[in-house]
Every structure is written in structure tokens, then in C-alpha cells.
Length: 264
Image 1 (tube, rainbow, N blue to C red):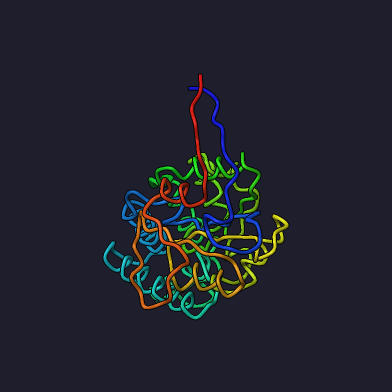
Image 2: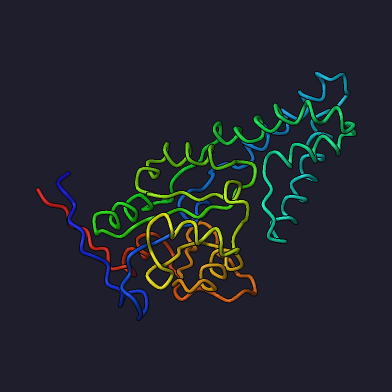
């Protein structure tokens, strides 16, 4: 395969305003997806049951799954309330749900947190088709790139490894994760951190994501242009939609004016 030539994206392709200097991306459903989410969840449930059994508790897989799922729902509610929680909180809530006393939980939370966080490394996280081409095309066109990612079970340190495996990390100059930023999307701080890292003003940037409530609302409120991608998940919620909606990374590349040619 020969060299790839990339034409600089035209700001007219996405919206009038300041020239496009930067693009920020959501992670899950935008750049990465889990081909078999249940695979990682089974490992997490097994870790919960094993840890409880090591403490002399007769906890089966069913009870372990129930406690873990209840803890996840608490995390989900916190996310909806714009609070950042992750594997550590989910581990503590799971142990609480299994009836462990507070003094017992303090000693067990750390190993369980690690098991919950790293289960995704044994899963099957993959790049969406065309995601690397989008990032590489923007890089060759001189457009800055950053990641703005809400985290759940998998913290930033784990997601970075998954992005690296998928061949995407090297194309993301800055990666901002909610567990490290202290707030999830749509809070402006997490977007501001990303833009600061790539030296771009909101009016010069565009955000690509799959969720209206977090990706689109958060970026728009800050003054960024927005694109919703529905390749993996089509968000039909009542929240306002993006400036543009694309079906795939190939469609996104057309919208941004990224033109590739193969030579040789």
C-alpha cells in the first residue's frame, strides 16, 4: 500500500464560524466498542463471588451478580446526576450489598476494584470501522485531536491500554477521563481540560460522540460544534440532537472533508 494524501478539512463542511483547528472524540460507541460485553461482566461476577468465598461467605454466582448489578445501578444514577464514580465505588457498593461490614470492606475493596477495572482487558474491545482512518486523516491534515471519555468499570488507565491495542492511542494527543477529571460529561470542565491540552478554543473545535445528553449537550453548551455518530448506537432520546448526524466514520470523514488517495 502506498502513501496516503490527506486534504485539510474545510470548516464549511461542518458549520460556519472560526476555522476548524481541533476535534475531540468520545470513546465508547464512537472510537471503541465491546464486541461481547457479557464476557467481561462474567469475569467481574466471578471475581466478586471468589473474593466473598475466600472470606468464608457462601456467595454463589447469582448473588454476586445481583450485588454487582445493584452497585452498577448506583453508579449509573450518579452519572445521571453528573457525579464521577467508577470501579472503586462500585466495588465498595458491591461489598456493602453482600453484607460486609465497613471495617471488612476497607480491606477488600482494593483487590476487588482491580479485578473489576481490569476485566475489560480480557474482553474483546475493538475500534469502530474507520476510526483509525479518521484520526490519522485529521493528524495528517494538522487538526489537533483529543479524547473526552466517561468511565465506568474501566478507568482511564485501562481504557488507554485498550485504545493502544486498537491502534488508536497514538493518534489522540490528549486523553481526558472522568475518573481523572473528577466530573463526567456534560460538565464543561472535562471538555475544557481537553481543549486546553490541544490549545484550542471552543469556537475552533468540534466534538464527535454518540450520546445526546452528555456528548452533544456538553460540547454545545461550551460553544463547540457537534456531530453525533450512530454507527454502534443510535441515541433516540428526547435531548436535542447534534449539528450533524453521521452513520459511520466513512460518513464522518466525508463531512469533515477528509479525502484519502492511495498511490504507488
